Length: 186
Length: 226
Image (cartoon, rainbow over all chains, first blue to last red; front, top):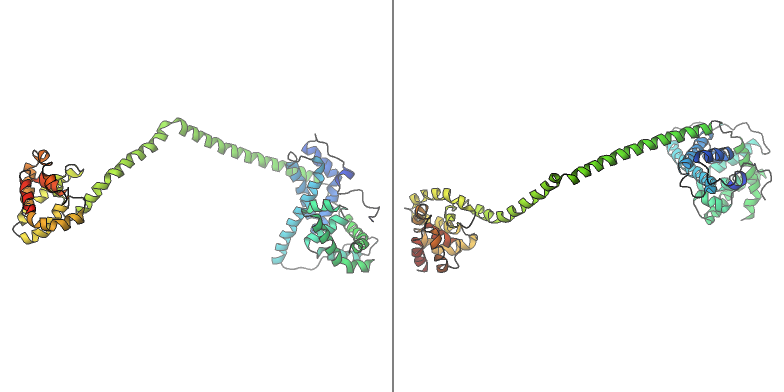
């Protein structure tokens, strides 16, 4: 059961933006997609790359790439799917690069928890986020796209470039890893 | 398996939502995107210009090569001239290998070969040989190679010429000494006659003897037969 209070900004194209008109110019399409999905895409990227500034860069690069590939994009209705897949792929690249940098960089103090009020305690939420960050990249992507993006298995498979079976596998394994923490929160 | 993810899915969804809501993207995102798009466009134009200029240069070069026949003809002419030279140079190479032994002068008889240029100096060199004539034994060793030298097959001529060389040793020298003087006129008529007399020894030897001395040739044949 998905909660009804899911934010209006969603990662599914047809829900918010609707079908992008075929005759739209690339600039007009980018502007429309930006106003409708930029924030949600940035937040998705934040959950993947754990850094808001980097997340914004990732999403901006995705929009630039969409603008360049707009003429080659046959089905403009899939513009959001293109953006989503681009964000996921670029987030992977960022994490890959970051892993290399952190491997040779001196280790500093852990990040202090941000002051945030919510239904769940700050410490528990931070613990879940930390546990989520500790998961393998594919499992984290599957969980974020599934529980934050509210995407179907087919959409997740398209965004991650894997099969539906692999999506199920990654989701199940990720949830199994987080089960102990989630049990405490429940 | 399927129920457990759904049980904790709501919790995870709320956690993720709360974490995502804490992120407020900057309002300058669209401007940044447009700036990057412009930069990318200008970069693309630059590469297009570079590619177009390179293509134009190649096109001009191809046009020049295509419409200027001299550029194309030079290469073909060189190749044609080289091939026949290689084909003809094979025989001279053989003679050149035999030059070191110092038997080139007899080649004067082989007027058919391209080396006749050498015979004239060879004849001059042969003149000193008669001075060494008094020692027949030493000359016998040198004389046979001299007879075989002009021939294309050195080994055969040398092996076969041993008996002949002994007999011909005294003859070729006087004949060679005579050749520079007598050779010019009678060389042509005498060539056919000696060749039948000595078929196998070496074709080159026979012409030498013929050229050396048309009058001496029959005498050599007789001695060889002896």
